[in-house]
Amino acid sequence: MSNVIRLSFPSRQEQRAASIAALLETFALHRRDESDVFWMKENAEILNILECTGQSVPREALEAYAGFYDTIEERLEFFPQYYRFLLSICQDLESLGMEGGKSAGLARWIAAEGLVEAELSDLQRGEAMRLLTRSGVNIDMDMTLINVRLNQFAARSKTFAVPNKKAAYELTHIAFYLSEYGRRDPELDAQVLQSLNYTGILAFLDCNFDLLAEVLVAIGYCGAEAPQLWKDAVTNSTALFSVSEGDDAVRQDDYHEYLVCNWALSELGHKPFQAALRPGPVSFHAAPRQATPLRELSEVMHGLSVRRSSDWVGMRDYLCDCVSPENADLLLSAEEASDCFQDFFSGFARTGMRGMAQGAMTA
Image (cartoon, rainbow, N blue to C red; front, side, top):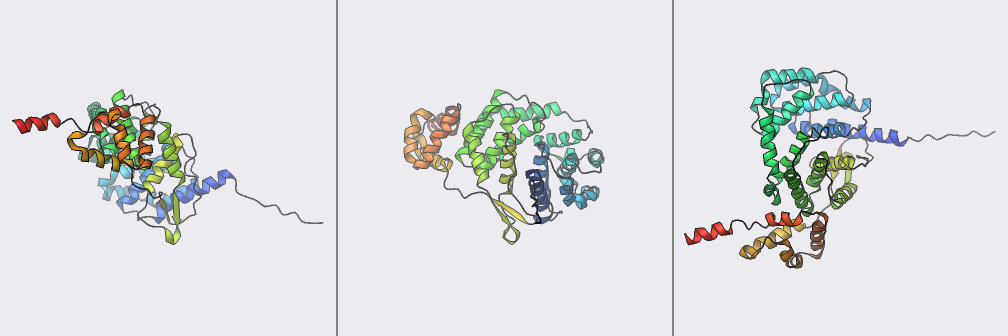
C-alpha cells in the first residue's frame, strides 16, 4: 500500500483575511508609536476606509488594537485636542467587530467638555457633529448654517479651476461629510459636481492619483459618474504600487495614496487591498512619475502673459506644440474625457483681471 499525502492550501478567503490582518498590524504596531498624532491619523484613515467600504475584517485582526482600545478613555482625557481621531477610531473598531461599546461614552464626554466649540473650520465642526450623532449624542449647534456655508464654498467652481491642493482636498472631504461617507444622498447641486470635475481634471493633469482617487469616491457618493479615463488612471496607478517589508520599510512613504486608491477601487466595484502582505513593518511606494502636463501647461500659459487666451479651442494646437508629445497626448485625452474641459480651461487661463490692470494703468 502507498500513503496518500493530501496538501492543504489556504483558500482565497483565508489569504485575504491574512492580508487584511497584516495590513492592520503594520499600521497599528509597526509604523509609528501610539502616542504620535500621525499614528492616530494613519489608523483613523485605514479603519475608516475598511468600515465605510464594508470590508470583512477577521475578529483576530482587531487584536492589534486591543491595548489602544483598553486605554482609550485615558488617551482622550490627556489628548482632548485629538478627540475626532480618537472617537473615529473607536467607532470604526466597534463597527468592524471590536467588543466593548465605549464610543457612546466617549461621545458624551466630548459633548460635555464642549470640545466641538474649539473648532475653527466649518468642515471640522461638521465632521465632529457627524461623529457625535453617529454615537447618538446631539448638542445645540446650527448645522443648517454650517452646511449652507460648506455648500457655498463647494459650489464656487472657479476656485477649483486653478491648482490649490488645500481647497481641493477640502472639497472632496465636504462631499464625504455631506454624504456621510456614502450612506446618504448629499443632494449637492450641479455647481458642486462641476467643482469636483474641475478638481479631477487638475488631478489627472498633475498625475496626482491620491487626489484623483478622492475625487472618484466623492463623485460616486454624489450619485454621478466620473470619466472612464480617470478610473483607468487610478486603477493602473494602484497596480503599480510596490511594497517594502521588514528592514527595507521606511517611515516616509506613499501610504495615503495607497489607501485612497484602494478605497476608490472598492467604490468602482473592484476588490481593494489585494497585495499579499506579511506581518511586520511595511511601507508603500507609488511608481516614479515624470514631468506632468499640468506643470508644462502652467509654465507655457504663464509665459504668454497678455497673449494668453481663455479659449481652449483657439489655444489647443499652440499649447500641444509647446509641451512634450507625451503630455500633449494626455492633454487631448483629458479634453476628450470631460465634457466641461473648455469651461475648466476658461478659468485655468486666468485672464479675468486684464481689464482691471489696464484700468489701473490709465487711471
